[in-house]
Length: 71
Image (tube, rainbow, N blue to C red; front, side):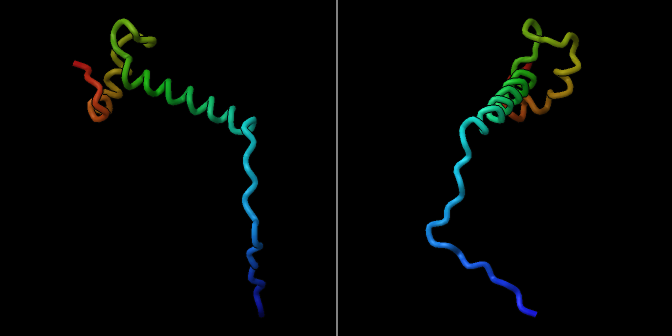
């Protein structure tokens, strides 16, 4: 039993991905990053969107690990 071995074609390159296909994913990733940055870095006191200490206590150690002061 013989197996066919693919032969590389000279000059073959992957097709570029059009910007209009990347843009929605880049926008989505940017929004996710900003939300995570807010939750980790800015969710304290006056700027909080979620009342109480639940979010702060949930991510407290992560804040210190990333270098955000919170005390």
